[in-house]
Each structure stands twice: as structure tokens, then as C-alpha cells.
Length: 346
Ligand code: NAD
Image (cartoon, rainbow, N blue to C red; front, side, top):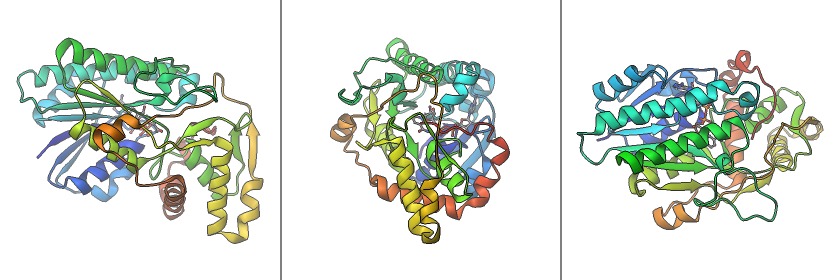
């Protein structure tokens, strides 16, 4: 039986991970530690309310004494670190919280784990969830990112995640902390805050609002269904080699404009009477400064070494996602007041 600390477990991927984990490891205990920023949402864990295996603790990963005592009091043997400021556009408007949470917060967690696990058994794990954006941008002819691609972050968000990745690596090499890092491509699926491209487009289309697409819409993203990502994190936790990094992606490169079009087509198949309307809502808006042109992940290592394979393809994953947002209108409508940015991200 494992005792997990899931930081950022009230956010998009973290909450999906908690649901996934209890489905596949019903005997384990999970402590969610989350600051509940605009992106954190207790409702993401509502169906687990009252479950004795889950404890929710509101708090900041930068609060070192709180983190230290939580590890000790809950006898944590596995940290899965999702907590972050995660929205590129917000990092352009105000980078400071990104530096604070993503770099300092990761440092606090690493340091607390090092102190607590110093005398513990060797099967403790610290898994750091990171992004392919640390590698920068690709030209159309470039091969996809591998684990050895040099870091070239372009946004304050990507730079802050790159800084945290380096700290994680250093804690392995300097202190022998049992760390693992995953760098994944853009996720989509249930519970994603509707400022990110796919839920933004679904929710705005449902409401008959314009569908903003940055620049020419030809930016390429490599979309990963969130449950496949959770399965990848599980594989790395269970079978990954300590101190190593694993790229998680599904060889699913899509131009943003095509992704938006596909969402419109799925919506059109569900609401045939509005099929014509959805695509007509697409509106091109001024591009994001320093917008990375293309991300693509080579997942050969996790496939070969850990036998990980995605279950969903883009069609099936996107349809599930669209259906989830249709069935959970109250969830995203309640978040409207927090949607202070209306630009798509990716
Ligand atoms: P999210 O913004 O939906 O959730 C982040 C969560 O962290 C929120 O619940 C928030 O309240 C919490 N949080 C923020 N600052 C905190 C702090 N100081 N202390 C405690 N909790 C704090 O993010 P997400 O999309 O679920 O991303 C999760 C992780 O995955 C991040 O580390 C992100 O960099 C990484 N990632 C995300 C994607 C993606 O497509 N969403 C892709 C690659 C990597």
C-alpha cells in the first residue's frame, strides 16, 4: 500500500490522475496538496468526497514547514508533483508566480523529501511532471523531441519548468533522491480549465461565441489524452529508471486550425441542426508573442523500455472530451468568473 502526495491534485491533470489512481490502485492512500489558485477546483474531486482514502489539504508548495510536516504526518512514500502555474499566456502577462511556484515550489518539495526520506526505505519515489515546452520550438523538417534534445525554453512558463527539471536532476545526482521526470505534450480531456485551447473552443462553440485562433492557426501541437498521460506516469513510477526522464506523447501532430475544425465537426455530428454554424464561428486573432511553432514528442523510449501505449486516438479522445463538456455544463459554467483571459493556449 502506497501513501501518495499529489501536488496540484485539484487541477486538470492532477485530478484526472487521482481518479485514475484510485481506479487502478484502490488500496492506496492519496493526500492532495493544492493552493486552489484560479486553476484549482475542489469540484474536480467531488465524486471522491467522503472517501477515507483521500485527504485534501489546501496549501502552498512554497510553504516549507507545512510541506515538511505533511510528508512526516502522512508518512508519504511517493510524491507526484503536478502543482504549477501552467498557462503560457499568463506567464507572459505576469511571470513572477511562475518563478515562485514552478522553481521555488519544486525546490521546497525536493528539499523536504530529501530530509524526510533520508532514513526511509529505498522504495520512495519523487515523480516530477514536466512539459515538452522546455525543448523550445521545432522547424517543420526537425525530428521530434527526444529525452536528449537540448533545453531551449522560449516562454517564462517553459523557462520556469526547465529550471524545475534541472533542480530535480540535481537532487538525484547530488543527493541520490529517487527522482523521475516526465515531459509530455499538450494534454486534453475532462476537467481542463476552459482557458486552454480545446475546452475553450468546445465551451465557446456550445454558447455560439467566436472561436479565437492565434495567428494563422498553423502552429503544430502533439495532443495527448489525459488518461493516457496518467497511464504513462503510472508506468514511469512503477518501472522507470531512477534519475531518468521519459517523454510522453502519441505521435499526434495537429495544426491548431485543424484541431478547432475537428472539434466543430464532432459538435456538428452531435447537433446536426447547428453543423454549419460551428465552423463559421472561427476567428483569427493576433498571435501570441514568441509563439512556438511546433512541438512533437518522440515517445520511443517509454514505449520500448516501459511498454507504454496510448489507448485513445485523437478522434476517440476528442469525442469523449466534447461529450464530457456537454454533460458537465454546470462544472465549466461555474468557472466563468475565473476566466480572466480569453485567448487560446497550447
Ligand atoms: P492546472 O493549471 O490545471 O493545475 C495546476 C494545479 O496546481 C491547480 O490545482 C493549482 O491550484 C495548483 N497550484 C498552483 N500553484 C500552487 C502552489 N504554489 N502550491 C500548491 N498548488 C498549486 O495544470 P495542469 O494542466 O493540470 O498541469 C499539471 C502539470 O502538468 C504542470 O506541472 C504542468 O506544467 C504540466 N504539464 C501540463 C500540460 C498540459 O497540457 N496541461 C502539458 C505538459 C505538462
